[in-house]
Length: 379
Image 1 (cartoon, rainbow, N blue to C red):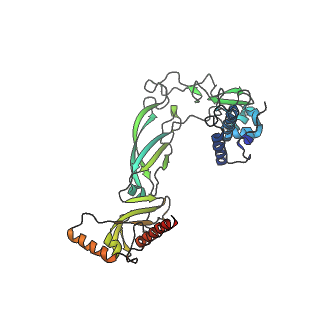
Image 2 (cartoon, rainbow, N blue to C red):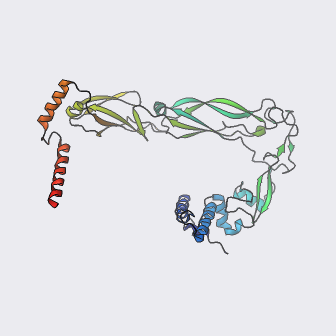
Image 3 (cartoon, one colour):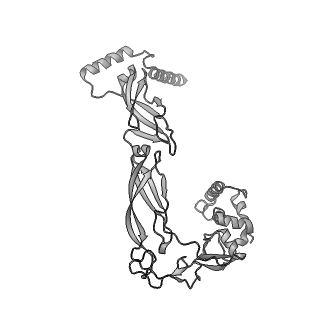
C-alpha cells in the first residue's frame, strides 16, 4: 500500500518550521494515542504513521533526503523512519553521502575523533551574578597520558599502523537501500590507525583519568540556568586528537532580601501600620551595595510598589541595568502593651463610620449590606 506524504500526515505545509512540525505532531499524537482510543485499530495505525512522519521530518538530514527522493530514500533498510532500526546511522552529512555516490573517493581519516565533552555545575549567590565572579570548578576528566605522550604506544617513537579494516579511512561503507552510507570503523574507532604495542599505563587509549581544577569566569548579569562553554577544556582526545569542551551549568542561590526577574530586582519592605498611615521615609539596600531612600506617602497600602530606576540587575554583555521595585507590606501590630491597645481602641472608636479613614473597608461592607438586603427582598 502506497504511503501517504509525510507532510500530509502531519497536516502541515512543506515549508513548515520545526516549531510548526512539533505543534502539529503533539496535537495529532494526543488525538490518536492508543490510550485515548482503546481497541481502535485505525487510530493505532494513524498514530504509527504520525510517529513515522515526525521522526523523519524533525531531523534536518532525513527531511532533506525525503524532500529530494521521497519514500525511496528510506526503502530496503535505508534510513528508516523508525530511528535507523536495523541500518547504519546517518553519521555524515548529505554532502558526505553525495561525495561517496558520485565519485568523491575514499576521503581518509580527516575527521579525527575529538575528546568527549564534560559537564560541571557551580552555584553562586545573587551578588556574584550581579558583579560577575571567578569560581573554581573541579572536574573528573581524561588527560593525555604522560607515559606515552598521548600516542597510546609503549614506544613513543613508534607510529601507529594503518587500520586493516578501513584502510586508514577511519570509516567503513555499506549499501543501504538508495544510499551508500558510512559509519565509524569499529576496529580503530575512527582514527584510521591502530597501535600494535599499546602503552601499559593507558592501554593504548593515549589518555588517563584525572581530576583537575579550572578557574571559570562568570560574567556579570548571568541568569540562573545559564550554560557556559569552555572550548578545549573537555577530555583529551584519544591518541593526540583534539580535546572536547567543558560545559558549566550555573545556578543561583536564593537571596534573603532580593528577588530577581530578568533585569529587574524586587525587594519586599515591611512597614509599621503607623508608617503606612502617616507616611515617612525608609532606607533600603540595593544589589550593588549602596542604599537608597524611598519616600512613603501617607495612606500607603500593602502591595503598593515604588520604582527606583537603574537600581536593578546588570544586563549580560551590557553596561545597562534594570530597575528596582520596592514592594510594601503593611504589618499588623502584635504583642501590644496596655497603653498601645487603649490608643488603638480609641482610634477605632473615633474612626468608625468615617469612610474617608478606611474607604476600602467601608466600601466593601456597604456592598455586602446592599447584597444581603437585595437577597432578603428577593426572597
